[in-house]
Image (tube, rainbow, N blue to C red; front, top):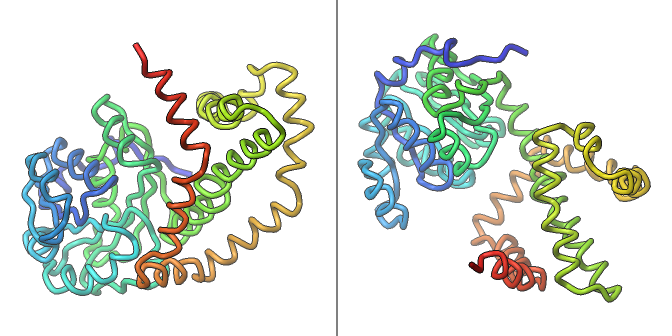
Length: 327
C-alpha cells in the first residue's frame, strides 16, 4: 500500500478554498482548528439553537447556519452526527454549495449506504482520521498528527484525490501518513470494529471480569484495578510494541496466563458472532437500526447510557480517581 505524506500533497489546494465545517463536536472542532492553523479560511455551520455555537465563536471562528456556511464555501465537511447528515445535506448543503465544490466525509456510512446521493457536479471524498478529535488536535499542536484514511467516491472536477490529500495534510495527517481506502472498506471495517472489538467487546469484557471477581468476594477496588486500570497499560504496550512485543516485556506468569485463558474467552463461538456482526454491517441492517433509534428519540441509546452510568464500577472508579488526584 502506498502511504502519502505532506510532500505528496499540494497544500495550496485547500488554502485557496473556504471550508465549511458542518458540526462542532469532537471531530468538528479539532478539524476546524487544525485547518485554521494551517492557513485555511474556515466557517462553521450549526443550527441557530446549537449549544456548540458559543464555543466555536470563542475559538474565533465565524458561525452561521449550515445553509449559510455552505453558500460561502467551496468545500463542505460533514462532521455532524452520522444520523443527521442526510437531512442536513438535503435541506441545507445541496441547495447552497456551489457547482464544482466538494463534500468531505470523515466516515463512509452516508455515502456507502446511499443515505446521501450527492449532486453530480460535486467532488465527494473521505478523509478519516484514525482516532478521536481530541487526539487529532493534541497531536497537531505537538507538531505531529494522526494517520488518516482517504478515498474518492465522486471525481467531478478531476482533482478530487489531490483535494483529499491537501485536506488531510492540513489537519496534520501528512506528518505521519495518509493511506488509501474506499468508502465501503472504511465504513464496514469501522462499524465492525466499534461493535466487535473497541467500543462493544472491550468494555463488556471489563465489566464481566469485574463482576466475576466481586461476585466471588473480591473487593470492588481490587477488581477495578485488575480489570479496568490495567487495560490502559496493556493498550500502551501494544501500541508501542505490537502484540508480540508486548508479550516480550510482561512476566512469564502473565504470558502463560494469556496462553491458558485467551482462547477460552475468544473462541470459535466468539468468532462466529463476529462474522455475524460483519454480515449485519455489510447488509446495511445496522445502519437502519441506528436511524430507527434516532427517529424514535434514541430510546435504546438512552437506556444503554443509563445502565452504564448506574453500574457499580463507576462509583468505584470515582473513589479511586479521587485518591490519585490528591496532592
